[in-house]
Image (cartoon, rainbow, N blue to C red):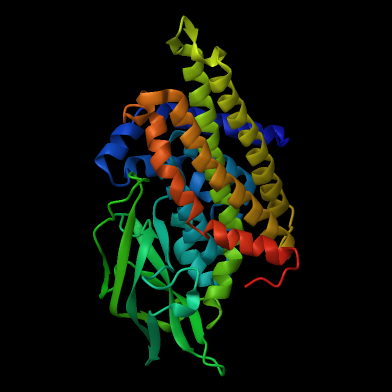
Length: 386
């Protein structure tokens, strides 16, 4: 396991206790009901979890490792709430903190870092995700206002009652070679012409908020541009290094939960005159899960600590890609293995392994697919792969 500071270990205990006492008793009901439980978001905000990685001058703590610890511990109890925290920080507040003007930061960050409001990031479209050049959403500057038309899909935290702003990518012009100039523009959710579609009927993450977003002649002032014009997608890519480490922490939480659930069940379940854990077929599954936990832990917190110590560029990108690739694919495997230990009971909704089984798959897709991670790793090795 990665050796964390005593302060970080104490913080882990605080979040784990909060998750066990305040969240765990309710997560089955929240997932069955569907939709984001705002009371849980409020309690997470009161604990300071949304401000962990944010700048101190706006109410944050400036500690990325603590954010990863929080995401892992929340994710051990419920992946839906874990992704709500991860997306609220990594895709919502972080771009504003990194690229916003002082005025934009002052307007949005205090409430976002306190968990009083949520922000969303609208990148994915029906034909554009990893291939940002296919973005169809357009923004035209008319009389000092951006007029935005288009639609986005699979947007986390976009439809809640406390979502205050959605930052969207849009084509704002063409380069000399014909490629689109893509910019990011902040759209307050109160703006006329912005609408959020019904929530998706998802395979997993049932207690998280995910919706399509439609923009029809939405008008915002020119100063709602986030960062440099034409650099929106490049800016977003640079924030993904942080996001991939945070997603890896969510995957680690899933793996650790599966290890613990399988271990406890194998110790308690009686068959053939004793606990099933005495059978090598079962014990070896739990042993493999434990190995996954240790490897994932090392990858996640080595990358998180590197981020906190100022490592960036190609080195951090490679560390983030490796952590995200390993933990997401291992999480999918871990849920299958844990379900196998539970046998028929693992297929029943009353056992958490069924929920983790559903939730894990999207970890291989969101914030960069496994294929994209392999591409980044290969390029980091100097291969001319496309």
